[in-house]
Length: 288
Image 1 (cartoon, helix red, strand yellow):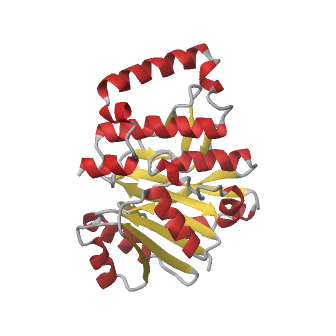
Image 2: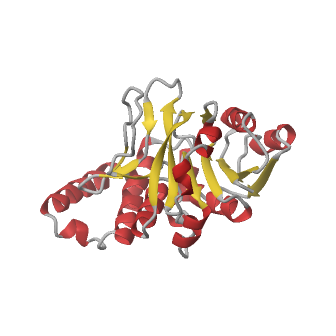
């Protein structure tokens, strides 16, 4: 098996057909599709079972988070390369053909390949990889800009956005921790940047696949602004604690200390999830 396509669904009935149709249109020998459903109640599972016979589906009794579900799919899959897709991703033509034509992928230390993720109508960039700023803020490269392509990956981009990404299995196995390939403690948001940072620290590299493109609406879990704000804050702190020099990276840099202090005070006042130290699964339950 060459490529395993991994999709996580959570009440995704309205979007999953577009995703799977675009995948199966390019399906060939050596591919498999694994869908993990995180306790959908909108008929997503029934739709997939009735319409997509080639798809392997894993059913969870509740929403365990995107990171946990992706780990399940990776564990049950066989491909040498894992392709993660959000349920509202629609692949452009030749998405896999362009990837397969990359000679550099045969470089044994290339562990991640970054496709061009565009917005829903293809007019602007959604992500051309993730990078960390001086203050360890997380950004998608090119977000909101007109579509353009690069001859090579900008140096500050450390890895792909997992909404659509290629991961080498050998790399995943090497950097896997006690909490999985994607750290399940993140639930969702930033788990892909954490994985890319771990991989980079272990000597793995990433590159662009310029001709692989897809379309992404974004926020397929439909989490509200305050929920995403809190989880971004919570998960970013966890990521830096794991991969940086602990929280010293914040404490001993005056600019970082000032930024972190102001941000904490703001969120403590205006974000009830931070005050409660809410669990991610409880947040999404309240967001329904």
